[in-house]
Image 1: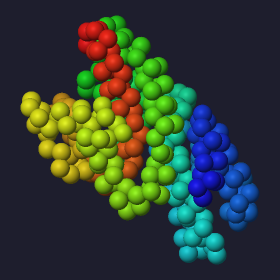
Image 2: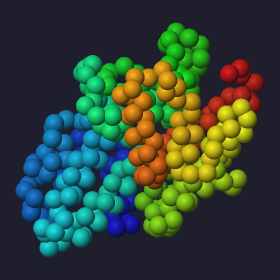
Image 3: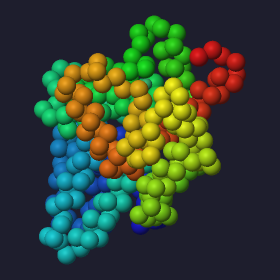
Length: 286
Ligand SMILES: [Zn+2]
């Protein structure tokens, strides 16, 4: 799978979810035949709405597509392994988001579902709760500023440089699936080391999180959950509705359980923090 995963990564890079799903349907049929119907039917499983959508939705549909193969196909192990690896490849991509969903003010029915749809702040790496199909630029507690304010404009200008830096990190560091191959069951321990270790290959992130362990924040940094919470710090829970407060609880618990899913967030945080540090050393005011 190693070479194949690399080939897939190249095919997928720069694509949106619809383009990626089309390629995936082609690759799947070429490899496993039309057992699950033709390309069109597979595409329908991967993107039921038939248009580009969020990456978390695509991941969810790949997972349910994968579940169909448990115990019902002679090559099921191979297929499940293929789809599982594929999720790692997709998770580690610089994911392109170029769709504009229509606005809708309804809440998700359960906090768990709301947590599933958290997105990244457009001016840092922190998570932001969203309503279904909300169109407003996602901004975290720290960056929820009027777009006319200088701090907002400064960070908006930084975004391009941060994206470039993140791409460099994606290219120079091993991808998530490579790390999983190298570290196996110890992958999450390795990722915890990346967050806090003094020789981490994400040095700005490690020193930022270490600083949160000291005054004034004094956060505990012992467990995976502690690290997940530190990455999102500060979340002003008391300012949020009970529904969204509960969603945050689900989000923290989920990310602590599936810690490896934070890898892209870690790279994004490193890129923002590194760019911030460069600006400060350049003598510019925060
Ligand atoms: Zn932010």
